[in-house]
Length: 424
Ligand code: LLP
Image (cartoon, rainbow, N blue to C red):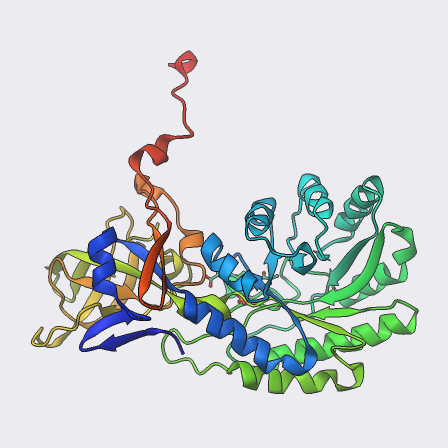
């Protein structure tokens, strides 16, 4: 469930008409329902209550400071993947002991910074990374907790760009290598091998691949505990799917119901700490992209709605062939029969579409459209392609809306550049 709904044919975000916001800030813009972010976070927390998990919101999905701060105030930790995300995380006031750091390519500087601010754990992706971590931790005179990211070799049914737990992926370590590393933990005196981490992919709607991967990980934990490695935590990653169209994803309660029994003999919450890193589940349905129809035109086989948001604002349809529902912000009767429509942006690329071959009522120039379920991997993946300023992020709480990130200006576009006279 989310808090975008129609009242009297008009789309509201919580208690604010989207049209009112569009009039105030112009289009396009991202619009977030803070209440929805918190609802989703709490649903997961509630569902896993028995295990007292640490939920680290995966901030790569949405790193808006207001959104993050709201989640952090509600008790969420953060899953980070770069020094930039650490910098943002610190601004939210999150307890560093609730930060986990994953990435196959952490730099020495990022590692130094993260150890320096006392994060909970690094999710380690290679033996080479362990060497650097051990070295830095030694220099900083700390004993740093790490988890080994296990590649459990399961292939969930999702887009091939966002599956991460198969043998051919760059992520994690195969079982034998991971076992060898635990067995040689003494070689890394400045690291405490305290956890096992997995993340098998994203937008996974079915519990089966999770179950398979968690079973394999728990077997692995048993095996390394048997050789004297005191594994304290299991991080099951993120990846929970949401509804974009007709998906039937598991609810938080169903997911917990499938996952928690697997931990029965591990006494989860006491002998084994459970960590989750949801991104999309918390944020996906919590945001929309609002855009305006600029023109419409007809071709022999279809209609085009040309809107003021493009693939630079939302790249998911172009990049993954992702489906986002598109609805009018104000429903108007008598717009005629549904037509086969492409909703396209102003960018000079044929891949610049928000919807392809969609049966839609033909909107008119000036109409506002809402591209739904854009709260995850929307703004964070946007760019300045075609020298388009990035759009603002507006947040709603109840009856009020606020600008959480202002629209970029033309000056912002060139702020970091210098015309180098010497080469002219
Ligand atoms: N943990 C790790 C280690 C991850 O790599 C990811 C996402 C997550 C957690 C959060 O996954 P989620 O709960 O959001 O599925 N840009 C793509 C999605 C890329 C996901 C990358 N990793 C998209 O727009 O669909």
